[in-house]
Length: 595
Ligand SMILES: *[C@@H]1O[C@H](CO)[C@@H](O)[C@H](O)[C@H]1NC(C)=O
Ligand SMILES: *[C@@H]1O[C@H](CO)[C@@H](O)[C@H](O)[C@H]1NC(C)=O
Ligand SMILES: *[C@@H]1O[C@H](CO)[C@@H](O)[C@H](O)[C@H]1NC(C)=O
Ligand SMILES: *[C@@H]1O[C@H](CO)[C@@H](O)[C@H](O)[C@H]1NC(C)=O
Ligand SMILES: *[C@@H]1O[C@H](CO)[C@@H](O)[C@H](O)[C@H]1NC(C)=O
Ligand SMILES: *[C@@H]1O[C@H](CO)[C@@H](O)[C@H](O)[C@H]1NC(C)=O
Ligand SMILES: *[C@@H]1O[C@H](CO)[C@@H](O)[C@H](O)[C@H]1NC(C)=O
Ligand SMILES: [Cu+2]
Image (cartoon, rainbow, N blue to C red; front, side, top):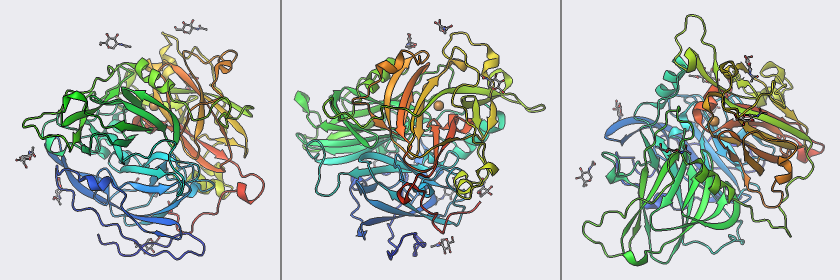
């Protein structure tokens, strides 16, 4: 591995020794991923902290009959699973032995008062350059359930990602019977071409991104694809046992439907929060989200040994290039008689690729555990209202340039018509030094600058134009914020998984067409709304979220479709310090990477 020494770790009075996690064998081409990689790795704890060493390095993998060099953590794809209990602090020592700048993000972890370890490049830190290292502290507070980690530089999260499993505090248990086993199911995508090249090609002409070549389950397309059958992810189960599947959508461009043939799933959680259990034939999971579900292994009368699991995208914009393929994995009853030639059962039935109503119907069933007698802690009084349009746009082609986006322009995207431009050094560092003006303007608009009929059928083409800017929104500590994210029909419209760092939020309302501030708030669910970190804004519809700005720091909000983010569909919330030491940002660790 080459790494024998951990970097200095920012912690008071704790002596931290290096702890090397050996890469679990070398990633041979299509080798079947051993099931044991999904088990708790038994890492020791020191002073209540767990440590992982993540070596960023290139590694060759074969998929779809071709070998390709990808960026990995410890040579593993998908990367290692992080195990924690609610309230733990986990230290991840990252060593960049790749050839690109990198940062890692702990998706859905609030990192209370500690934005320094949140990860998005040029928002909370400068990237870790090749040869460099940085130790992240993942500070788990209220989260319990399924989350994940991923690179937050360029499009590197394509292959640099893994699951985070957060179990109940020691001595407490799940709000349901303890499952026999817990298995991450990571939905992703695979490109035959180098992902850096895919990005560079799109940027050079302003065109749409090339679509992926396969969808994947735990890194494998499954046996509907050429040269892929040997690697297909197989989950061994025994009749009568209950399995907790922790489904993560790590894809760059797709929301997914997911189902298991011959089995229903009982959904029990979404992001890092439990939901009221409900039974479903299939789940819908947008990019960035997680769904935790229980699967009771019951073969039924068929006595079959194999059942397919499958994921297929939801594609809401017919113009966008999406990979519509179906990825598969196999549920294998290890206690069933091995029948010769026992091919996997048929594919599970999944909604059509354009069935947004099926996605909306699933999403509407997500309810937190609260009840009328014990309502969720949803803020009732709102201090700051924002209405934010979520748009895919165009930016005029510069003279002399050849652009291959819509109307001969470049593709762009925006929030409230601000197409976010990445600064060249981190917003957090500048803000901490009281110099935020050097990197950003603090005038992100609370409302669309010029209102229009957001979801009209025929919008004038000029409305598609937008302009770049690094504009952020500043909030007072403790303010209650309501953001209505409003989809638009500009360039046809699409759904958008909007992710906020530093917070989970209550999704209090959702609807089609234009949000109506006079009538829609009366229909909000303030009793048992889901508590999430990524919300699916429906195509040509809206969602309303509420949160208390009680986490001081600099927090990114962005679409989790990577191309939309690259085009500018994001902004930053700065939450100011409050009164008292527990309402202030922690000081930065001494080893922050520099720009
Ligand atoms: C980590 O980086 C620091 C500089 O920030 C360097 O002094 C140290 O040697 C590095 N540690 C390792 C193990 O590479
Ligand atoms: C990985 O692939 C690259 C190019 O595809 C090749 O040059 C290199 O030798 C390969 N490395 C290994 C260890 O096979
Ligand atoms: C799959 O595995 C079998 C048996 O190990 C081997 O003969 C075959 O070549 C493999 N196929 C592919 C496409 O890797
Ligand atoms: C989905 O596609 C089918 C076939 O192309 C079409 O008949 C149907 O109207 C579409 N549904 C929606 C909701 O767009
Ligand atoms: C907005 O556009 C929709 C769809 O074309 C239309 O039904 C609605 O009447 C329009 N609203 C207004 C206020 O013009
Ligand atoms: C967005 O900004 C661009 C550039 O300033 C402008 O041309 C366009 O009309 C604006 N669109 C809206 C909906 O405000
Ligand atoms: C890597 O990060 C450094 C520091 O921010 C920056 O100067 C450099 O341009 C980055 N490299 C690339 C290829 O983006
Ligand atoms: Cu988007």
